[in-house]
Image 1 (cartoon, rainbow, N blue to C red):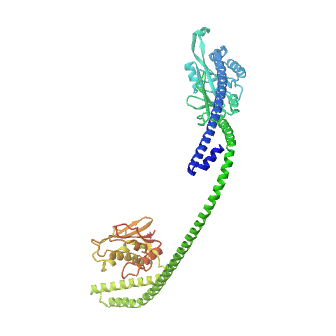
Image 2 (image 1 turned 135 degrees about the vertical axis):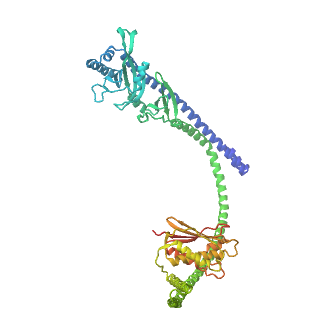
Image 3 (image 1 turned 30 degrees about the vertical axis):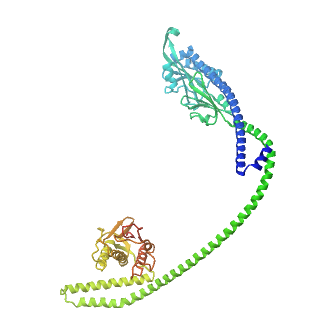
Length: 567
């Protein structure tokens, strides 16, 4: 074998040699596997033969118990004392039968022997003097009673109703004799029952390594080494050695099941012995091969060193490239932060300018309102109603402008106005009225649903109208140049109130959608990019939110305003 290994290593190419050694390894594995199978097979045959002998012994023992107890029931069914007790159930006759049953129980190792009359009531029993005596108990519901009356004898395995112990009930009918001759039998007088318990057998089975089960035709366990398995399906694993034999005289089947572990152990011993012999034969080859492999490993180590060095250089190059990329990313991040700081400063400056403009507008606005009030007061009562109406409109608009400027000043101070119940329908009507008169809104129909006048939301009237006007104006501007333009307003009232403003324009581009609520971000040539930002801030002050629906090709733009409903 050593010369073969040397020839393979010196002359055969590396790939061929590896395949040849693999073939040799497979052959050795096949030899070991064959040794295991042969050893296991012989051990299984021995175990199966021993188990068959033991099973026959146990079946004969069970058959002997059943034959003896069945003979007891048969003999007692012809006993004159038993027949007299059924024909004339005087206390003395019943007591004599109970004493006789008590003596027979000890002699025959029966569990209980008792006598039932034609109604199924026990009139005598071997346990007559015990607390669990059967005397007086009604057993007419038992199959062994009704079957014995019909067929002469019966067998039933069941749980005791008084003792609560399982056992086999062997019954035989007792018939009356006309004239005292056996050939002149009359109707059954009653039934003799012998109950057999198999505790001794089951204890003997429990002390054996093999499991023993006795099952009925349905496969349900009647007897077992483990009493907890009674009345359950037989639990045998698929790899167990299983031997079965019918029990004569009864429709039972006895099964023994043994673990295949000893057979596997024998197979392993056989395989180990073969492996030891093969190892002794392979030692010279292994020594030679180790020397050859040592030289090959040294050569391989040199090659790996060169490869590792090249890999280290490559990894360091990638690391430097990654550091440069991270540095560029950091510089770009710093630049973005600087741009955001500039935008924030612009927003802060705009807030200050807005507050100043609002303050300056209030003085001439108050003058306009005062002049309108004086003009209305100077008109004679009942005259020039159109002038009076115009002056009243000037007062309302001046008051509205005053509220708007006050809200602008409040927004610049980051403070919110008083929030309370507001009629959503009135706010929508005002917003539609104000935007309908604008240049962009002329000729654009607005579909608004019938809103319940009692639908109230938590908001502030002027700021809510400001949000709605902003959304409608944006929709009108987006519809410029659109054929058959239309704006649809939707209202859904549930836990929160949702107001949707949808147009059939070209919709939002992905770039615009990504920057909708960013300050100073706008796609309009003359826009500031603050309308939606302010509207969203106001909505959140109300406890709600403002957002745009995801983009849908050909569906236009849609904004959703969520508000808290007023209870």
